[in-house]
Image (cartoon, rainbow over the protein chains, first blue to last red):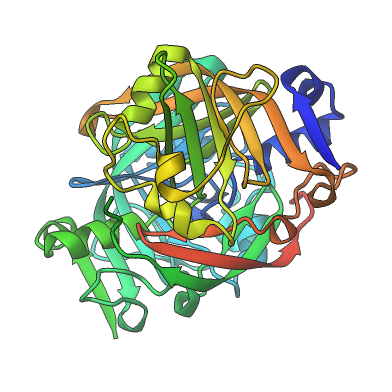
Length: 205
Length: 205
């Protein structure tokens, strides 16, 4: 048997079920921790499942931010300093990563609260997550409003990239995510390990 | 040993390796086929790895489109009709899905070229992919320019949703992606099966 929901039927679902359903409709999601620092030196760390590729040249990454949500300290800090880090979540740290989504007070660093380590490298003005294997330093380039629901697409340019040599194939340019332990997310609460099925060649008609 | 790349070093990589590297930096990606129809009745189908959750109420999904790339027929058709479908890629159809990324001529339907089936339901003005288990009908709401690299964030509202009952947990609202066979993507060429590690409860400080 199969189900057909119209938009009105989706809107009529119990709120928690509707949120879980709609959050799962796009498919699998990236899982990253965004690290920031405000001008008083206070660190913030928050998990995001909306980090996406925007372009390769210049190398751009985006994420969706809600102006008035739990991630507001992240957005405030990025606006204040213009810098932030994106750090891949792997299988040995996903519980700590998830815990950063709790609504901690501004003066509480999520690094301390969840037990992850802020790492400063080469004078970059935001903390990396020492436990992450793929660490990206970004410079803010554009904050783009999505009018229909007041969210924001935050776009940054990759300034610095750190990773252990053994997870990268220099010839092909690709990471071995299974070796890195990078995991995938679903809806708001699912954490998934992966297994490579296959890499496919550039398609021609 | 570990590697540190600056933005200048990334820009200096051989082009194919740079593209593969930067495309893998955001982490795992959703894999969806977008189906469209132009006003002459010509169908188009293209794989996208940038479909993302934008909001639950109203239920919104976005994707990144390049104005002048292989996906241009998709964008043209969406602008023409205002309607499109998003269809999850599962493990038994990923090769056909990948093949839609070849540069077929406008008059060639990718449905026919790759061997997937256009399905029309309830007068919706775009074709669903019959082989997909999660099929979403969307109405265009907003096309938002990303100035820095001339890409576009295309945002649509979910109008219709179809799925087999056995992959959805109605109490919790979540899909069982492993049962659905939904897969995850990496960089431009990687196709990955998944295994649920765990679902985590809403986090509190």
